Length: 221
Length: 251
Length: 67
Image 1: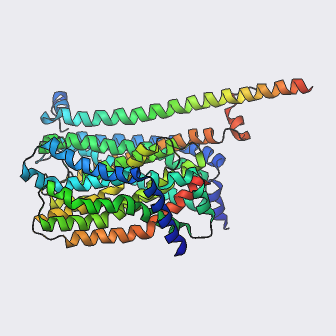
Image 2: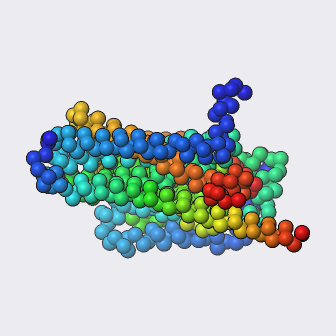
Image 3: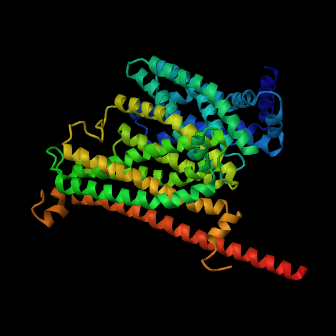
């Protein structure tokens, strides 16, 4: 437990020193949420319909943009090798890094989402469901994205390649996340969607650190 | 080690597999051609007109086999990935690199023929039905694999990273398909599935199965052919490759 | 025979564009794959042969100096 918490604390404090990295995800989310109405038109009925999808895609892309940084800095200065070699379990250290990534890039999006949801005229219950899906979904995205980040460590053109690798895997989270809000708005209730999201999160929480650890070992050998 | 597994592991060596692939691929290719011609004959000259879809239904003779193959090849890649990651064999990674382009080609073909079937049938070049959408995502998974393996220079790392990606992708494919189906039924729109449920005439089914068999054998033949090129490239510094490459009669 | 004339066959009951567009692209892609694979194999062989010959001649030169 101690190494896990230590890594979380370390990653968070390192990132907070370079605040611009944290801010770019947040700004991207805000900008994307503003661009869609500008591109589609201010008709409130349309915006209310597309709002959940737009906000979810925005959060997805914002989360994806910051994935490259998850392992890159530690890889560059040799810390990652030390982590792989250390006696602490690599999956748990990786899990700690993923948690830190979520705290910095995912949680702010959850907090910000109600404000942006107002721009799409979503009602209170829809906003609640939206926050719940993002709360379950953004860690899921971090967990899945981490595998891509580990596989593309140090590779040429890693950022674009990472997007290509990770976006297909993001589809289930997007479908159930945005779908939950739409189901809520349609009066059908979002509990099924939320349960499925929670199940996916649990499965990913178990398997992803292990897959990332394998990928990191492959990348570093 | 039983004698039987000795035989299997013998062909895990690139040199032995090179010879085996060289002997096999012409036969497999010939079989593929035979079944292809047979299937096309039945499909184009024997199977009757479909009462709902007219002559356009004949597209299924390439569309369905292409879809099936795009999925089977991905499963094969996952299988080789597991083998490669468990036993650390070089050949597994090469097999995946040999299979991926064909799988991507079949996925694209499935999408293309699906669009050409969709336009006359349902009036749109593209419909977001569960099957086609999943096929599109599968196409992206193939491209991702090819992109990743192409950008890693070290062959062993490239093989293993590709293998892990293929495995992660394969595990996700059922989840993706399930979520896309859910998404599709919830958003009733163009909710027709590309493969109509109507019962097929015997001849149509026969032709489709023969074409599927032909495509499958084609994929095997071309993968065997391609892996030979990969083996030569990877093993170029060994004596057997140098002997293999030496032009006849030269010292 | 289900077709009364060659014209009927090519027209495919009005769906000729779609049917032949599908079969045509199929032939194109599969044929193209085969051709590309063959070409890649030939080029690889040639390039590896060149590399082997360069290595041989370099070794000969070294042996000359050592002699």
